[in-house]
Length: 66
Image 1 (cartoon, rainbow, N blue to C red):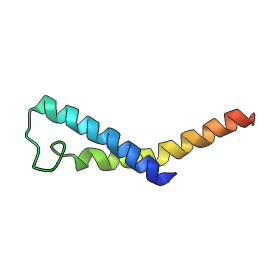
Image 2 (cartoon, rainbow, N blue to C red; image 1 turned 180 degrees about the vertical axis):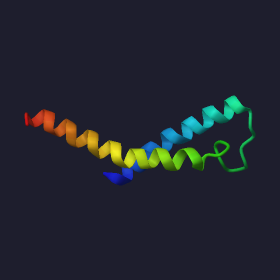
Image 3 (cartoon, rainbow, N blue to C red; image 1 turned 120 degrees about the horizontal axis):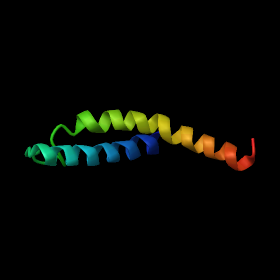
Image 4 (cartoon, rainbow, N blue to C red; image 1 turned 90 degrees about the vertical axis):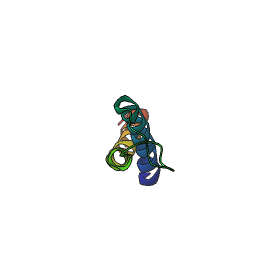
């Protein structure tokens, strides 16, 4: 559950980096989707590692009536 959380959060971080880079009008290096992409992807990935399993467990508890 941690791996999908990391990559899901990282993809959201890449989207945020793309939007911020577009607002700053910077030109990303060749092969990267945005400027400073890793400063957005890594923190968002860590949030995804924590958030996705937490939401799944919370939702399972609600469904099972506990």
